[in-house]
Length: 155
Image (cartoon, rainbow, N blue to C red; front, side, top):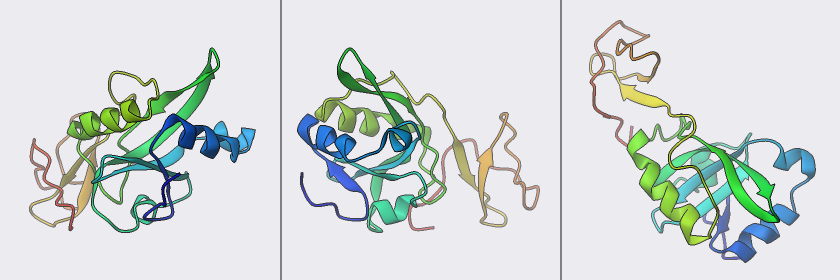
């Protein structure tokens, strides 16, 4: 296994994943994990209680969220995967980078995020928001949120 850049274990191959999974307890494997996809396109995994930014060692990422795994017919695959990361607030359009990282291992996965989170930054008060039920109004100041993703990774 290659060295992680943050607290996350970098997974570059099926052997890396099998080794990592073998070190997790059955209880841990039943829970979601924090993941990031680094700028190198590799998956990094950490316990769910970990912050995404810590998992990535503070580096920029191509994708981030939560992920679950399951064994099916003797092989590991992704059960669920989201872009739920309040540290990075990734857009739903980050899916192709996540899918490529999973394909490189390879790990079977859904065709898209199983749970999509829509993040926007309010132009009026600069707070980060999660858009629920297509209500593009800032929960902090009531301002209108843009329809397109606008969360700068440096915010």
